[in-house]
Length: 140
Image 1: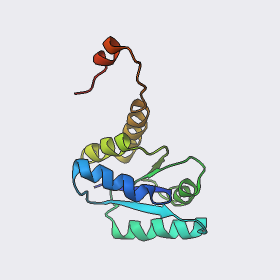
Image 2: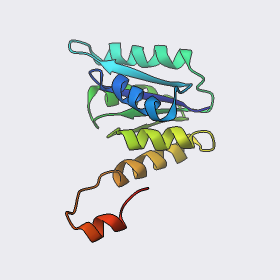
Image 3: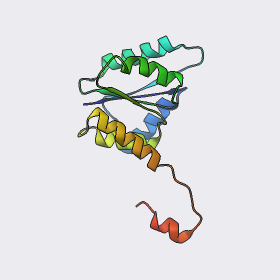
Image 4: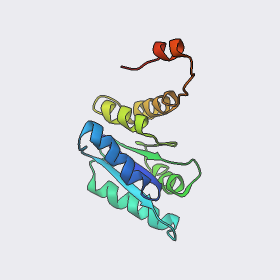
């Protein structure tokens, strides 16, 4: 099974994982890493490595982080660049996580990367304030 690691500034990663598990139930081989004030990239990379050692990563690792170029991304990049089957997606949000968790049993890491990117983008919506248009777009 592909390991999924959610890495963010502060406890956002822990809380968004809890939200996903409210919907999907407790997940195996999924973890969160927090980047706290005063920590450096090396400490964050060590947190990632420590978590990876505890996970089943034989099918790969997908890092889902908050900001491109932020410390959680940079630390994950250091690790992913050294391994073939590790990918990173930024802009983590709840719909993205749910799609990834629902697809990882039958997808490769590269496929999950695409699923995450597409679902993250598709989740961004606005209220049009046009009742007919909103009803056409209603998700049931």
